[in-house]
Image (cartoon, rainbow, N blue to C red; front, side, top):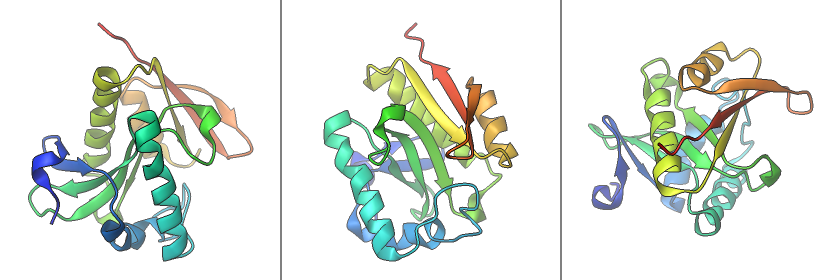
Length: 171
């Protein structure tokens, strides 16, 4: 059961820091090659744990890191993501990402998570720009980023990803 009293929430979702107890549920989709075909896929539960805890370790340094995403009605973990600086490639700066269990694709949860991350960046950080990446064949992700106001600014051949940017207004 999540600690709802301290979790950040949106209309249908709760967001909380990663706990070791969450990693098995996250690995179900983060370690699924078909589900993660457009992004990083963890090869083992240990790899998943090491990667997620590396991201979580940046929370104190940066003031943000990806959240575990739970459905408010069921309290079940359905995703992972939000605002982060990638601990394995920090030079890209603040990014948003959304990684959902395939059972929850196409239902607007990615948009809800991304909007929450952008609002968090605007209200609780000094970030002036956010980045995002989408595989060229991941048309739904590119479409979502465009709807959120991101602009495609190039292609990163070494990652095989389109790069997007959103300028944060402070109005």
